[in-house]
Length: 171
Image (tube, rainbow, N blue to C red; front, side, top):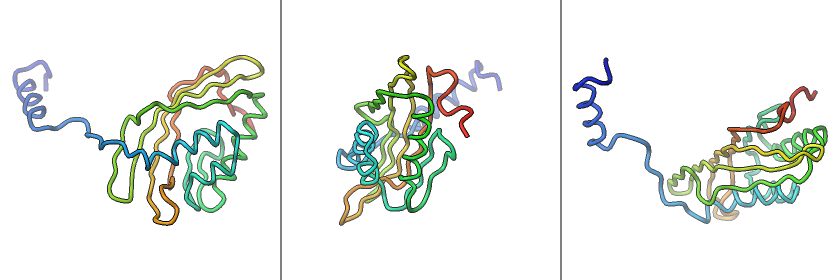
């Protein structure tokens, strides 16, 4: 189909008029975002206990450090250890993550929530300032006794000024 044709224009107009388009996000629930803020604060403080408190007891975490998928009991400890290894091997100092003031997408369905959170990370590698941008995607849930927790988290790196990328070639 030639997308410059009148038929294509009519189809596009019909789709737009029908409300088809990007998904509409729900209003952000600040309480559901507390474990996200705890994760950021825990990493900035390099505090494994604070990180563990943000997650469920058996989360799934996907990150850009090997083995890339950390799941089940002890996942946060293994994730923290893998990141610590990469940071030390790279000579990284001054790690600081900052999340965007608002998720780029947030949806809540009762005791469950889904959030996509843009993050900027700055640090130095052997004294040279570096930065990266990415999105953290979270599946959160509410537990009556524990409050909101992260059940799953996946980090997607969008840009990185580090050459070679952090962790490249580490065994």
